[in-house]
Length: 144
Image (tube, rainbow, N blue to C red):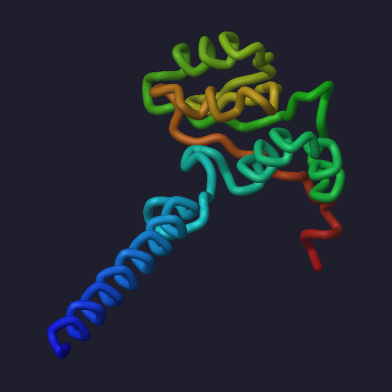
């Protein structure tokens, strides 16, 4: 009788362990692999990553308005830092995604690019980083 009771307890323990393991696996499947939230593409600044995510959810215009980001027909003006010696390749990458180059200087490009293609642009091996342009401040604001 004691053996049957022991067998039942061992079976319950095994079933409880399996249930806990299945619950843990289900929770882990819903989390990023490193346990940290997805911060987006490492070559995009945080506001551009948030803009891309908002665009995927159909909220790009509202996000842009809330964060004073000017959109131009579903496109955004960005500053692209090319890797040294890769300015031509970065320029070609902008053209390949349907962007428009506005100006360049040393390893920097200013372009207007489709929000939906920002991640593809950041994936290009010639590009170091992509950010929003800095807003100009009036002279009297800087003297305070």
